[in-house]
Length: 349
Image (cartoon, rainbow, N blue to C red; front, side, top):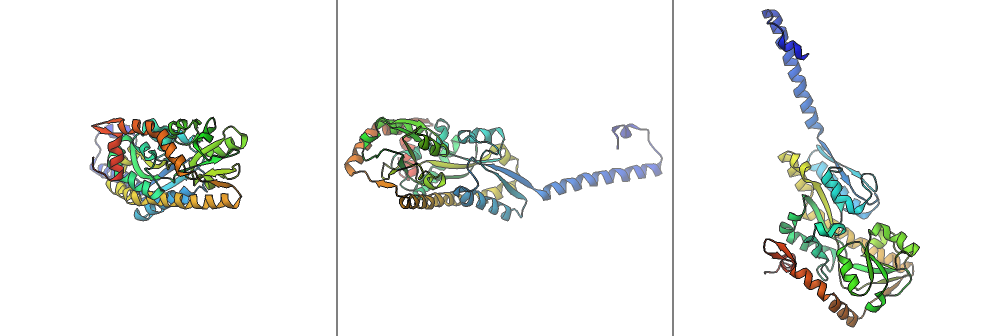
């Protein structure tokens, strides 16, 4: 019906009945259309900068999508966009999520440490001796840490402690790093590497293979799982294993407005499919992938190096000023870095 039809003169009783019948049919059509949209549900767009073969896809993205489809009876589904499909810049994953380019996004808080300073404390040396322990500590501190995310946290987990992967030079002791160009995926690692004399720079691990191959960098400081995920064994000759344990966090976030726009039932389905258990899936995958990557590197003839206890003690003493600065840092609301570390560790302050 045209808008002008509602402004016409009153009709006879017979034609009025026909008019009413037309209105009822039109209303039913609108209601039917609404029902169809509800039955069809929502498709959520998940963006990541890694390829479809990266272990995180099978370990985290697929289980999340499958569980969400299962608990919702197919009314909430996930469509994955890998690599450069929605955003090719790893450090911009969070920004693109806030802009609504994606509904869900995977990334590393360490790429933009200034935005996630509390999460970055996972990288405090010794905080995360392995991916499982680190993930459990992140979730212990999450009630406080979540405040720095302008998004719904679906998953938050730790990677494995980082190793030094060198293309041409052995790294047996701290002095060997002096003057070496070393890349680190997480910005907070740069300060620690500079304390041992390295010319450190922040570089996504996805770009490290080419940088090592061309000689743009001398070494990369990365999660051991990266050896397999990004084929870092190919340009490498040496891997130094027991540098003080420093790990990175990984997130899976949902746009806050998208989450708020879901119904109460839909939000419950999302909550069921996400959380600590999903995060531990990620941690276990990174743990297993690190073991496979190290085994592959060994088979390929790469030399493994273990620093002495005396060297580790020396490195920790060099790290001390940076560590103390992090512990004393004021996070507001009466919280210091030491308080956040204690929360993660399950200690009283």
